[in-house]
Length: 455
Image 1 (spheres, rainbow, N blue to C red):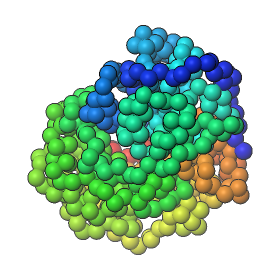
Image 2 (cartoon, one colour):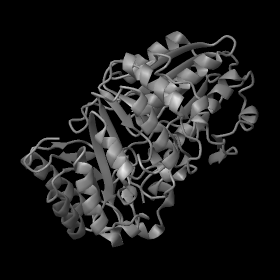
Image 3 (cartoon, one colour):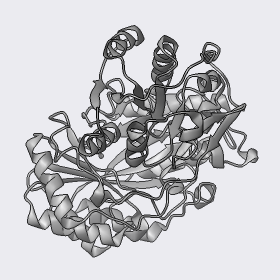
């Protein structure tokens, strides 16, 4: 069951006439509002990857403009985009930007239905467009790019025919059909070595943290996470390509980089390449390196690598200390190995254990035990509010999870093991505890410093 909080205007009636064939392209991304629990600036990497792909391919007649937004009203953005008069508009959609972009897209399409409106990013999924507040948007969103978007979007822009029939021949799309969406055949996973780098092309805003990716996908299928819906990674970024990436990042004057792979230690080939590239380049000598590790697969080589970094910050995604709870989300936990791993990592880096509040199958009592257990460790703690992601729990949870979640921000309201009152009460408790312990509270997560320290 999903509770609706808002309803968009009815779908726009289609006007006669073909879609535009020009190559004036608008790419639009939006940063989340500044969150006290996440103060560091991180580039909109997905949009920049698409931009790099288009600029490198340079199809005839390409005119490309990007909007990388911090603050903007719907009215101001629509006015600005219409002044550019694009033929194709691509939106990089995340939880925080999706409702805003859906309304922007409606107004842009209303101005000229011949424009092609394309949504990409994690929230560009049929399941998200199936939420009550957004169902009408299938009347003005022409295509959703599923998973890797660089080649898909480039193919759309390069084509002279963008009719619904022509788009059905493009791999990796979801298209409006009758009362729902139909998906075209999946596009094979991209080879990151063949993808142009926005850092090497100096397309990324300066400052903050760079985004580092050595592979895509994940070998695990944890139901709360979207990584496991992608193909297990086989193609990884090479050493030479990583060194060029570091060269570009160095020119952007960033404080360091966040590794957005599913985990530092989940792909041996990519790790070997990263370690060699770091050994051969001084990028991380005095900069931050932020990553996640899967605790059961941490080895001595990973510890040694993190010890060679200037300032390493490591997240251990445990989610819960209760194996019965973890079984509901296809995870497990080894107490003895976890303890040793945590202390080994702590010897070479700053460490934060991560747990989730509101997991199906958990309960207030079990969660509180995990919270107290985590606060007893000599490391930082991040507590995440369970979110029903479009390619994860939203489509993979069994009916007996009886999930109720906000259809806009996707935060769990109640589910198996949690009433709405219990979940809200525990959120309030964690907020008070974070304040008491010198931590920070944000919209989706809370940060606790190590006992007696800062993080």
